[in-house]
Image (cartoon, rainbow, N blue to C red; front, side):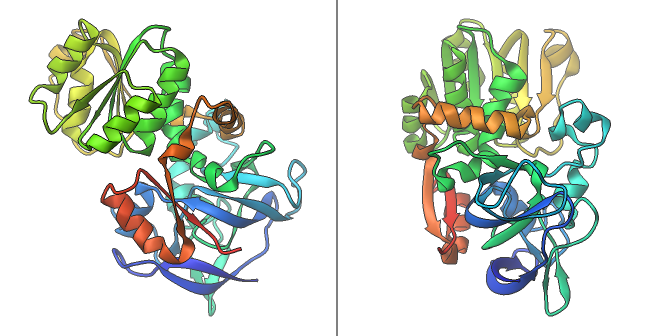
Length: 365
């Protein structure tokens, strides 16, 4: 079957929309007609080969659309179902079998290795195989994915709104609601006001946190954070002592902190702004970090943890967050700016430059 897909052939080069071939779904897989796909920093990281993915490749890992065809052994989805697609996982390792697919032992291979979980590829052009991404490659008009990675959407959900729930939104919201599970009237500091940070802020409001502190460098984003649930904001460009300010606001330090930036200095600040017995969460891909373990971690009995994909089981968590969205409690649509598929490079550039919080590309009808 011929489809349109945005291909990266060389590290750092722009996406090229080309006609390629897609193979039919195999056992346990589905073919999805993509309606929209979120643009995520991870796509850019892979485009530039900071995370190496075999090239040529089609990226995109926050797809949504309509099931066009189901492969053998798929009984819980049918043609015509609206779905959002999340990350890939094997489904049979110890972590997957104990409801931790976000910690699948083959997570990196499946999502960044360029092939489907069975080791084969579904995309090609003129006989040359093209790598997949996150088991979906949703920067395309159609995608093949494992049915287990697809989430059937509740009625009345706009496919373009649902798309980014597959990664960035569930990462931020899940870090709060699944990993931290903050106590009522507790305090939380969130470093970064992008999609992940804003999702964490909205989730903290749902959880009943008394003080929600948004930390960022864009006044417009900080203003929106306040509208979405932050009780306090700190402009990192105008504040010499971020940790001291958080301690002052919370009367001794936040109970929880989340870093979404991946900047080692901010991870350290997140750790230092929580009180004794507090927990700091790392959500961004972070390099080397030096801390004094006794003074900053063990002595005050703090925890520093990494969370992947919001510790979520997507088929359970995404529908719940979409219900919150329909109730007006999780207004994620306020983060989104839409682009035509033909403008995918502009969407990535605007996202990278911080001109938009969440870019979503829409496929031609």
